[in-house]
Amino acid sequence: MPAMEKTRIDKWLWAARFYKTRSLATDEINKGRVAVNGQVVKPSRELKVGEQVSMRREGLTRSVQVLAISDVRGPAPQAQQLYAETEQSLQAREAYAQQRRFAAEPAHSIEHGRPTKRDRRDLEQASHPWDDRWSASL
Image (cartoon, rainbow, N blue to C red; front, top):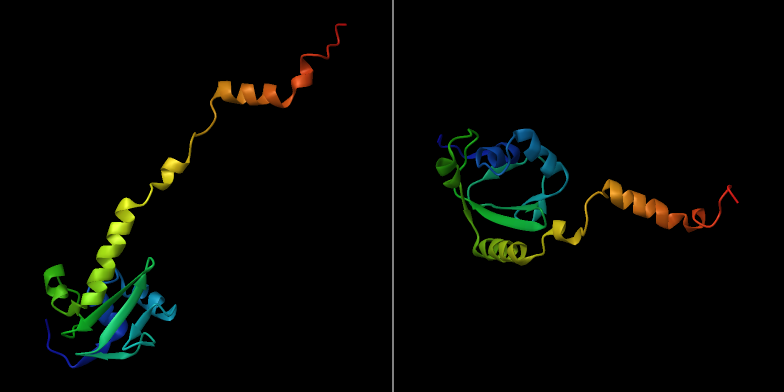
């Protein structure tokens, strides 16, 4: 991990493994989902040690304190040494995980899948009840 004083926020987010590619990090920054010290920033913003970075993702905001600067993407254990997650962020993530764990499975709200051939015939029969009464043979 090279010792640096500052680097671009998009490079740091990519190096710290918050985003899979640097362009994904840039897109999220441009959408206003990343803030440094409470202010929305641009991808070219220089990031320094000690600053606080907040990222909104999937209805959850993660806040981390920058401990080290790197613009090289290394292994995950090395990337985790670049930041320390704040206590509030850890608690919010735990609460979010609990909420998702106990939430209803969306697929359970679907009672039936596609109708079978028999179901389609029954539906067709139910939509035209007069077919039984009217006949050309009379």
